[in-house]
Image 1 (cartoon, rainbow, N blue to C red):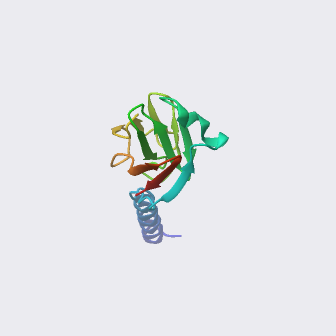
Image 2: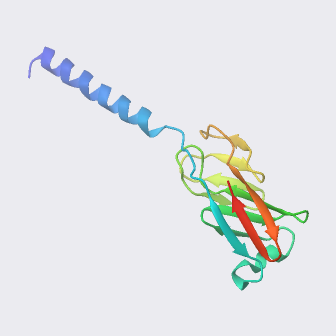
Image 3: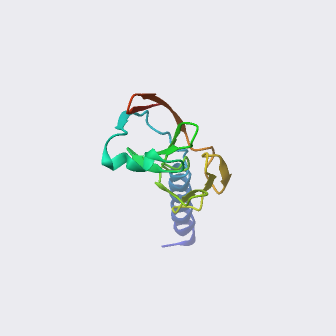
Length: 129
């Protein structure tokens, strides 16, 4: 391989690498959710007290004492599942950090975790968004 062929091949490979890296950093777009939770079910017993929570359909649902909140468990950077630490959410894929209400604190995520509407009818919670 002569110098001209080497430079052309190297430039082509760099261009492909750059295109792939840009594509992998695209913002994740969460899907809409629409599901229910039965508060009388033992699987959802944690929702019976303030601070208790369950995870269903990649959504974190918590009893705030004043009602219920629902936050996506999928990072807005690339859609990795975040973990809840009691004080906030952490994305293990690239170090994203969110507060307990889903507000972006640091890292590569471009935005807050999506939140969903929670309505209660008797012992049924409906989560939509």
